[in-house]
Image (cartoon, rainbow, N blue to C red; front, side, top):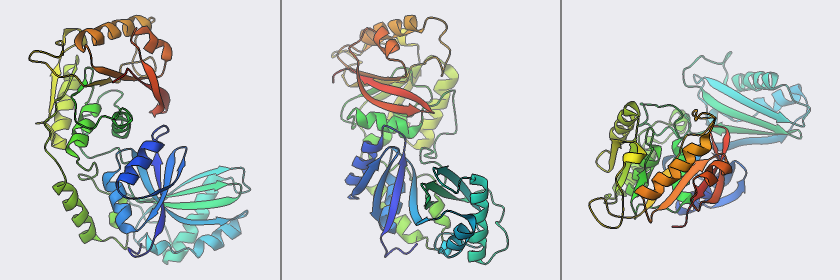
Length: 377
């Protein structure tokens, strides 16, 4: 990829976070061109691609729109694929993996489409076979109404993998979703943040990164580093700029969980991410957590956000409404005057809390549609 040329890019985003991602792009002085369900289109140069991967907190992948054409049969698909400049992104020794989806098209056999394009790519790169590799370059192919769109993934691992989560608990909340929830709630690190049932600490970790203005992609690798046109000096410059832009955190960020193994995992994740000094986590059930009122040692009102258990995620027995009723009572007891927020798939469970929650957004948590509910700030 030539750093002097403008390319078309596409940020894949979990449903419900598209406008948040568009706002993030605008903050990077990158203009969103179109907001779709599940993604945001934008254009830019190599520097913008690097910055999007480095800074976007809610995107899952950043794609380069490589080619688009109409095709209705396999010989034509092969001929067109063979003429594409694959060498701009893929070295002859790089393994490649194709991921294909089709809708309302003559070409509808996904495996054969992948094989045809793989053969065309091999021919174009002057190699006989696709090498075997542990980190293949992902190529996404989407065919709708006979229109073929081929995209090159620039991210590698999904962007929610920040590089700090090695201690995983049951039903972890993806970092991209946690960051998106905080931004939907307009939390920016100026008021305290608490997760009273924090699990492995996604809300707390993402909150600390957000408050520090730390780029989420600083501590991981990316697929674009294997491209022929990779500019290591530019990437290092952007990372150095990001590190210099970090600020000290003086806001309280804290959490708790009743499971000692989960608390240990959360603390280790904080240590690996470099925010252990900014985040306090303890083992304590919600009913035993101290009251955080406007006076006293645990003073300061802010945002309480949590991802409580629900049926398809963790077993609550036959009467989950009883659990949520108790949850509401304990949140009201421990955090009087705070803004309260939670994600939950069932409005009836939210209603059972007895708290004045309003739905803020509809989101996706591991394939399950959930609502983000919050009280007034």
